[in-house]
Image (tube, rainbow, N blue to C red; front, side, top):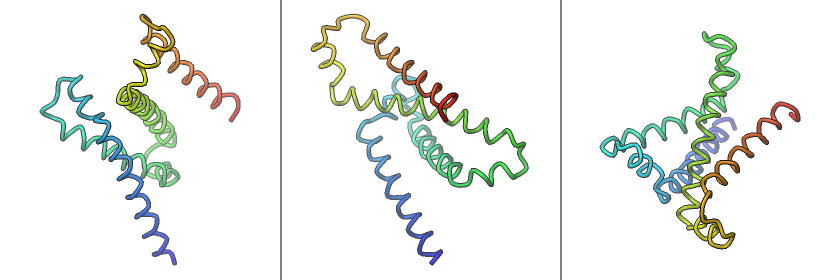
Length: 142
């Protein structure tokens, strides 16, 4: 029974990660980052970093308790999750903006609302509001 559960869990994980990587490939997020950073010749390394980060994050979320009981200090697991959460938030924000740009929703939004200047500031404050709401939730509600 345990073998069946392990096979099902692994296959479901592979299936969901294939879906995530399909979305990343269709949006073209990694080539866009490579173009912005002027490192287009290292695009394969960037794609490998995305795959490694996904695998490391999955392993850390599954084996969280055993990571804290190893040779590392007890606070290292929390520090790892803080750093991972920071970079995961940056990645999700970039992915959301890439999808919105791909769908041309930002220019349509700016035309309909009459924004001509300051759209970047509006997006910045929307992101800061989401960050403040998350911090409030984790500090006071949870």
